[in-house]
Length: 576
Length: 48
Image 1 (tube, each protein chain N blue to C red):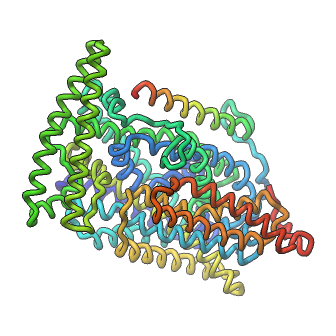
Image 2 (tube, helix red, strand yellow; image 1 turned 180 degrees about the horizontal axis):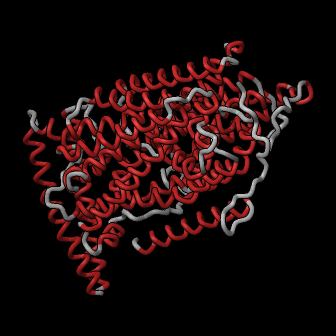
Image 3 (cartoon, chains in turn brown, orange; image 1 turned 90 degrees about the vertical axis):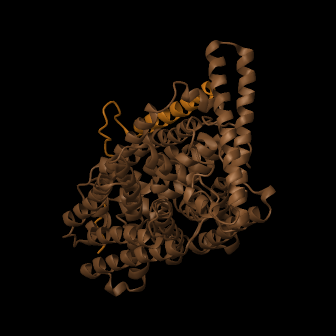
């Protein structure tokens, strides 16, 4: 990075944060602090929802995921449009009608305070952990690549977002997210255009022939992580949980001038989310093609980690792997060119033969990359052997012109700040409304004190996330880590809301214990899969299993407890 | 400090050209989703 890059980076990131802080510095009303301005339009809500969901991991890790495994991850989003339609038709009108600040307030009115506390606690636990991952994910990659100190990178990002989120609350979050999304769109389109100009004519066909463009897989195998079916069903439940019961999203669309604004904001996401994610995974698949024609493609993209070990006592082994990879890479390039020539020549037999040779070369190349990972693991059992998160950042730093590099690094920070701001805002709100006001009901009428407490809680969660990020370490690809955590803690919560909306006969105690049992079942299935990998099911399936078991347990417990006739549930909140 | 409940949250018009009710908006979004999946399936097939 040179001076121009630094000017673009700091000007963009600090400028947006300062603008948001200054514009919302006089937010003293609790309603505005927690829900944002009442004149917020649907586009701002839509962009805010999108910005909260898409963190840096989306832009940094997803292209690497596609580079490594192709476009199959896209199916993860297939349930999202359907979930958003359900949220618009069922969840949102009820939240608006009751005028609640948090989704868990509704549980308190529909059931009882212990169910509300359980819902709020599950959210705080899950989102609190994710807030740590959200801040850790970009910091670990950027600090590794640039040689920055990891703790200081985490601290800088964390403090910046704490300042404007605490100062302006939801109003500041909405305002800054809009500008951050503009930076993100601008930066990603620029990167795509630059990449496109560097690709050979047959790039899409090459990516397809090497298995990177398989976007839809209809195989009904539950052990496959990403298929059309797991994406549709598991993705539907995961998205329903996220958009319907997670306060970080609910808070984004509860504001707005009218119900219409929230609904249109969500429909905006239902339409544009899959095309946007397609664009990002396509970028990753095309990066794969780009690197097939680069003579100096690294055998391992996390070059900092690689060089650190390659300079040690095992240097001969590492050098041998590098040389072996260079030979295989050159051979693969020749085979790809032979396949392209055969394809253009229209010779079917030659095309089949060259394709077979090309796929064999790809397999050999994958084997050497695995050998490189094994070598790293052998010299250091704690070495980070997943390098897919470093593919896109390597491209940014080595192929983009100065100024654009600064813009793309600004994209990474903007997305970290925007998703983090939405999370902190929601964590502060839930702590204030569902915990503090619940335990200190006499002080709930003091508006100034409420705002003050919301600010303190927001700051506390910000520092908790910074602390968690300082001590955490992840083995999985980062975007998967986020979805795995969500798939463990969301399903029981969604089950509680499903019972609240659709099963009027079930009361608070039954649903409370059903949620506890469903959460235990999900944890059991998850850890059984870890101990017996041959029996592990794709994590997306935990969502329908956890939700359905919560609903079924509720019905069973309601019958067992004999609540049906003894004490009918409250009718304060209408069911859909 | 409870905010005033929204007085008319029922079914306000979407105000989207060509789509008069929310049901039509949802149908449009669903149809667009099906269209996207079909396009992606075709995309996977063409470049397989």
